[in-house]
Each structure stands twice: as structure tokens, then as C-alpha cells.
Image (cartoon, rainbow, N blue to C red):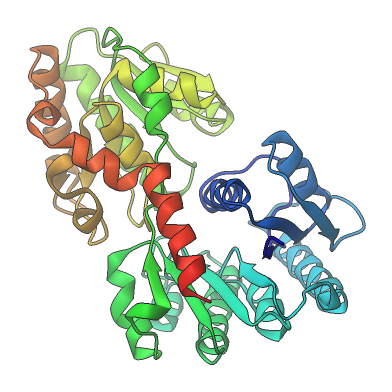
Length: 394
């Protein structure tokens, strides 16, 4: 009889997913392929996502229907989200009898509404994942980290939730924690986690899709993918594009994702409208093709956790220019080119240098051991580590 694993996933509200949600779905699919029986605690949106991604398993619903879209940047929207989290949490706790002592329970985020049901469940084997470290309390008070919002409420919730969840989980017997960045390990050891209690996981890369997409003519000088948010360094990105188009004849760039509404007016003001194309949302295969059709990926973010997009660019053989955040070198080493944070002029010069080199056929990634990077970060390797962690947690 196969072991049943319950994924507690109360944070999915729509079918538009990214980052940690994709990571969770890939790992769930790996568990199913390894013979585990899957059940998911979550809402109607999660049920649709599982069907769309063809992940097998049953669903224990924790909401009455999909939550209407709210403005998460406004106070009213944040309170609506919190109220919905609380309702999902209550419904999850009310249905914990579905988790038997011999089952596994896995929190797919470090938020309280996923972790607390796992710690309270009868499952003898308990798991959680830590994707990114929340801002510290002092950073929230001073708003010194770029992802801290103006009201600070969402950041306080994130900080309090992560701290509470980690403390509660650290007290569980037969626990196992998956974490996505090597720099997280010292904090986890202070909480009492030891090497057998933890497994480092990569963010995961679609190496098979990348290998299937042939080399492309380098049509675009710059490619960018991200959210329209100050954390992503959008102002520095646009200033760099304006600087480059004055220095490089025939300069062209492409933006991926649903960012036209937020950025088209600003591009027009800067005289960049004819130099930048918008792809909208694209498939994984088309994303790889566009990366391979570009000379440089610009990453002017002011803060990141374990950004898969840098790995995707390296996988596609497209040079990366980024501000040197402390998280990057442990993950990407010399496979990216770094500018001192947050020196815009240095970032601009580094971007120009790499574009000029690429226009002449000089790609520094050709001199890197990309095969080792791909093996280390493939979904095959990541899934194997996850499955080994499930066994270790027993």
C-alpha cells in the first residue's frame, strides 16, 4: 500500500501561478511518479491548477469558491486576503482527521495557514519548505528592504508568519525542512535543525525544454522578465535602456509577461516605444526561444530570494548582468556578470559591454561549465533530492 502525502496549499487564489507554486507542483508530480498517493488541502483555484498541470490526486477543499480578485497593494485588499486566509485555515483544521498517523503532511509555504495545520496534524512525518527569508523587523520599521510595502502590514504579516511557523515546526518530532538557499542554513541551525533535518533544493530548471529549443538568431539586445515593482529595480531598468539606445545603433529589447499596461506609458516618455516589444504571457518553450534570441538578460532587482529567471537565462546561453546581491554568487557563481549595488552607471556600463561583446560573437558563458550548472539545477536532480528528503523525514 502506497504512502499518502497531504500537501497543505492554502495560498493559491488564481490559475496564474509562478515561483513557489510551480516548484510545489513539480515536486508533487515527482512524488506521484514515485508512487506516493497525493491529497491536497486548498481552494477551488488550486483544484483548477492541478487539473491544468495534470497533477494527480484528490482535493480537500478549504474554501467555498474562488476568491474575487482584490488589490493586494491596498489596505482593504490586504484585510480581505487575511480574512480569507483565516477561513481557509479554520476549514483545514476542521478536516485534519483526513490525515492519518501513517501519512505524510507537507506545508508548501512558510505561512501559518499552511504550516500550523501540518504541525497540528496526526501525521508522524511532517515537512515544510522555506523559499525566501522574510524581512527582519528592523528592516520593516525602517523600510530598508525594497519588498517592504508602504503600509508595512503585509511585511509584518510575512515576518511574523515565517518566524512563528519556523519555531512551531522546529518543535515537531520526525520533521524535515527543505530550503532553497545555502545562506539560510545558519539561521536554521540556530533554531535547532541539524543536517539530517534539512535538505537544500534548487529552484529547478526546465533543462529538457531548453535542450529541445534550437539556437536562435540574436534579435534582441536585452530581454527582461519581472514584476512592475520597485523591488525589481524597474526605474534602473528603464534608465539603462534609455542610455543604451543612445549608444547602440539599432538597439532592441523585449519584455516578457503581462507588463505592457504598467510600462508602456513610461517607455513612451523615454522615447523607447519603438525600441521595446512586449511578448505578453508565453509558454515555457516560447520563453526559452526568446531568451535564446536575446543577447543579454538584465536583472536590476534590489532584492531577491532564489531567482529562477537568472538560471533560465544561463540555461539558454544568454549572459546575465545583475546587481551583486549577496544571494546570487552561492547560486550562480561566475555564470553572471555583476555590478556593485546599486550603482546605476556601473550597471549600465556592464550591460553595454556584454551587448557589444555578444554582437561580436563573444559569449562568456561559452567558457563556463554550464553542463554542471544544468545538472545541479535540473528538475530531475531537484526531484531526486526532494524524494530523498521525504524518506529521510521518516
